[in-house]
Image (cartoon, rainbow, N blue to C red; front, side, top):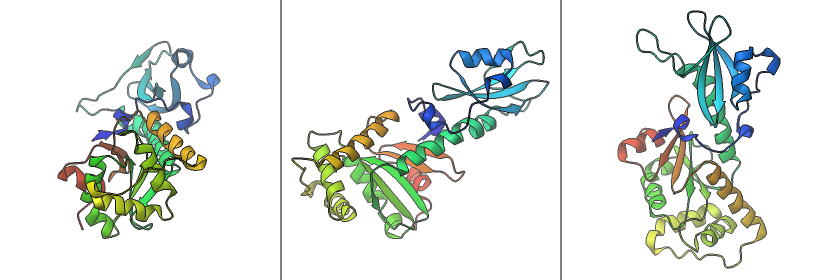
Length: 256
């Protein structure tokens, strides 16, 4: 399981960052030079001993900058106090990673997914899912107690990457009269599934698949299931592959 801050070495671009950049005229010259090199200054924070902290984003990684009291020098990196506490972590989480996480969650919410579970379930989990993925099916089985109890809704963002007929099968699920039932029947059957790939994918369904694949590529994901969830602190987390029992509880909550 990876924290989003470690996951987001991805090419989402500035569109995912909702916090406005500080105006150039507000920046000291030394900080402005760093921004001119490609860093995006997203906010300021207090720092000890006359230092002034700046939270920046560079290639979708957060970094802390510290302007010296004379305003002529900039230190880059994490700052620790005498107790070993990282003084940079909280500002970066608040000013960089939290907005990035919010934007990624919104992107998934707006993607083309099939719901598995009650709409009013208190916990939502997204996963990029391929109909031919055995580990997606394993996670589907693992999650049954939570889904059946109404505690969790899984949202399958359908993609087609494993086999030649994967896009056609995902299209068949998305185009089904009742996508939720079609997905349930397919996953419940496992290897015995009779899901048939669409030979000709309708243009609107193809557009949905293309958009899902584009999002998967933006997140630099290469396999399914790629699972995203909010932890107990409200921070976005990611799990690649079917989770172990201890991680399953972190993703889905206490077992019903």
